[in-house]
Image (tube, rainbow, N blue to C red; front, side, top):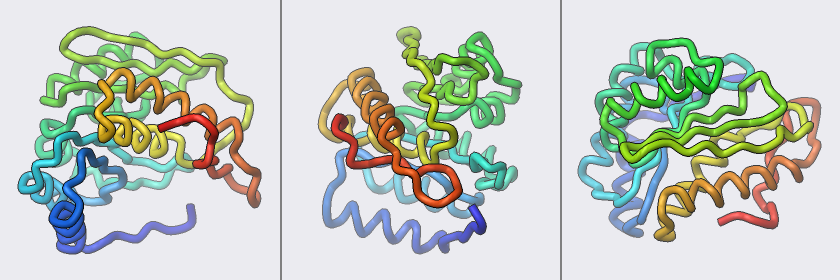
Length: 216
């Protein structure tokens, strides 16, 4: 990542309204929101849109360490967007920021997930891709309990957009009417295939193969 550009908040809200007026989406997700004004614009757009399912991917820092959400916007995200979300999908660092604690193991993932769930969302999926382990663990926490998905880490090295791909795939599953756990199951399978077949392009992190053979 070499630079970051922001969209005007009024344009963000207008985009939401244009899509909702024309297509009546069954689900939506948000990713990088940059600042408090855009968080507020998304909250306003969702408030009038009545979209059945909303997945919040709280993108805060790039894989290379570039800040993607101003710290001043974190509280707005917690108060305005998390209570609207069917699912919040933070990685370890994002879960730590939202829960105000360090998250470096599965026990801390559980505790952070409970804190985030208490902010009003219906479910939290903490992505364990940054765990120091040969195995990746993703933890779902809902009011009904917990579920862990485990998979061997693929030796591809750095890949770009894994979390965004997963949250988008889950959103697509919800739009198709799948129950949450099935949408996560299939989203994880799709994302793994997209990682395993990621093409080598240039010298940076690999882009995922979004034409992977299995998925939504």
